[in-house]
Amino acid sequence: MRVSVDPDRCCSSGQCVMAVPEVFDQSEDDGVVLLIQARPPAELQSAVRTAAGICPGRAISVQE
Amino acid sequence: MTTVEPIDAINYPAARGGCPFAPPPAYQEALEQRPVTPVSLWDGSRAWLVTRHEDVRSVMGDRRFSADARHPGFPFLSDGRRELAAQNPSFIRMDDPEHARFRRMLTGDFIIKRVEALRPEIQRIVDDFLDRMTAHHPPADLVAEFALPVPSLVICRLLGVPYQDHDYFQERSRILLHNHSTTEQVRQARDELALYVMELADRKEWEPDDRIISRLVARGDLTREQVATMSLLLLVAGHETTANMTALSTLALLRDPVQLARLREDPTLIKGAVEEMLRFLSIVQTGTVRVAVETAEIGGTTIEPGEGVVCMLSTANRDGAVFAAPDELDLGRDARRHVAFGFGVHQCLGQPLARLELQIALETLIRRLPELRLAVPVEELRFRTDTVVYGVEELPVAW
Ligand code: HEM
Image (cartoon, rainbow over all chains, first blue to last red):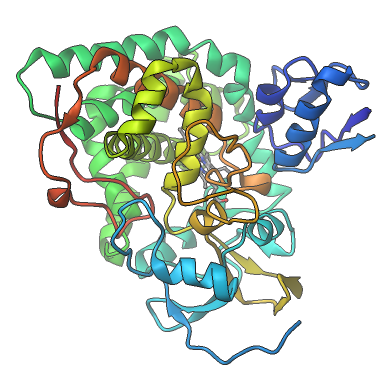
């Protein structure tokens, strides 16, 4: 799995950070998404899919 | 698309039915029979009611639908709300890029880490109000003694607003959110609130602190009116919503002993339980409103520029295509796809704070008061049906 984020679409809802803190973080200044790892291990992949599905800005893309 | 049966527009807002937690039957029927339905507003004007989860997310995530009430055709809930939108709109009524500019001045305050750091303080506030409530003999009104003061004190601290003034702005924010407030009432309440915050902002110039209002003032790139509008949005949105969620969630738990027992046995369910309550109760009962600025097709219906759209969050959150057995409260389900906080660029800015407050308030309440119960028959409760945010007026409890 390969994850990418689009900071311009990010609304800083924080839902990705709640879903998978191992993969997503937020900038301290404006809460915009930071990607910690673009190739999450198998055990995190389902949570990453959930995060992409609930992101209000559709800022997370997942390539399987 | 299949042929459309000519049907009468349903009234918006529609009346609720027998179950205090369920959306109005007319909206539920629309979800099942005609998910994009014409509705008739208070002044006879028309708008589209969008009821399905997928369609609500489409509208809210699509720039062809504007949140800017200055566009012709924007659907207003009342004359009062039209008045509110006409002048100095806050960023909840703007589109990007204007909206993003203001919102991003505040997003840093609501990142998960920073909100999580408030946990000990919020826990203290929750314990403190609960101590006070239980210091006297039951019954107590859970709304006035617990559900309202907790988020009110929290948002006052974050903004740097003196909590002793809470009666003043609570009274006025109620007027702003009530469907039957007259234009004059709304104008007066809004002007008084704006003046209150502007005076506060002036004081912060001389006595700065590290709270939100003071930092907005210190930026130097905002007018006093802009600081006041942003602060008021936070102040109003920050306590009415969480307060009503706390009281209504408590009622829902008291009415469902199986779910309450489940949560008591396994307090680690609390995070998911709060998501499920947000879904099940969907307290923003008016839904969210937009106006089309370009032609768009939603769920097979063509919506033309200048036509208003009401996204019904409560029906989207009970859409069987997304949530199995949607009318059941199931604290163990994964409800995170709910749209109780909206969707798209306007999705609730305060959601991490609301979640934390609800988790702490509900967990503490049921842990500390194992005998918590309603002190009046449920039939005697009065529900807040004519406001933007649904809730219960008073919740008399014993313990
Ligand atoms: C359970 C509690 C809450 C619920 C159900 C809720 C719900 C919502 C919804 C549905 C919207 C979207 C409105 C739209 O798209 O037109 C929204 C926006 C907003 N909420 Fe909340 N809210 C809650 C708590 C809070 C709190 C605690 C705060 C402040 C600290 C807050 C501040 C805001 C702000 C500033 C916006 C506008 C965001 C924007 O336009 O970008 N809310 N809320």
